[in-house]
Length: 269
Image (cartoon, rainbow, N blue to C red; front, top):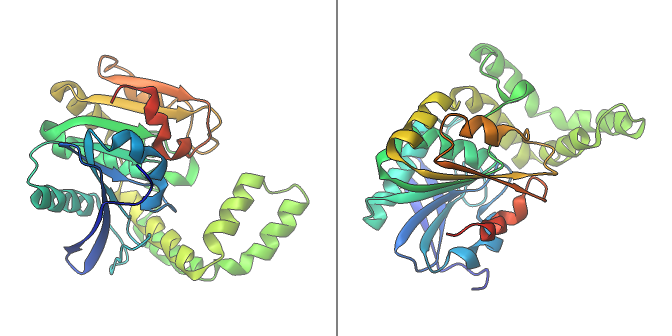
């Protein structure tokens, strides 16, 4: 299969339009979420692996790709409602989930909601299991997040300072590349602003996730990139602890992108 999609569907959800790319001809439904800063095209390398077993719906996240989002925030419930729209559209009663990075966080939040309907879960370098530093943001009061969100719109003015610090070795390369990529354009600054406002209310209840996986015997595979500098390397063992029978950890010699899901070839789908 080449990287051309079989179909595209835009779901009307409230005042929003959620873009979905539909691939494959399999009997099983797979719903996939790319990571933050990515679009549906992220999973192109994985599609040849999925075509025969799954019909895969890949979703552009809020303010990403062709999805339009007309509110300043999003919630866990929004992702639940989007999945319900897909189930209604397809007529499927059961399905599997795939998520990379922030998309992995989205998948984790939906496991307790849809546990009885889930066949399998695939997590690629998932965010949300262990959140270093500001990624937790739940400890930051809502009023302060709203106040500081306005600064993001002018944050591109700080890029020359960041470049100066980076040249002198006072700012890590990864931090500088993040700032340069996400603050350079107005569109990306709007993404940063929305996710800064939303993330505190989009936290993973890990205890509930584990209990749901165990109770419903959901086969879960978590892929960790050995060269990943974004997601902590121990998230796999944290998730699997206490539910080892249902969680398989795959440590892959890649970075954070995990080859756009092509690492799925290392397991039996």
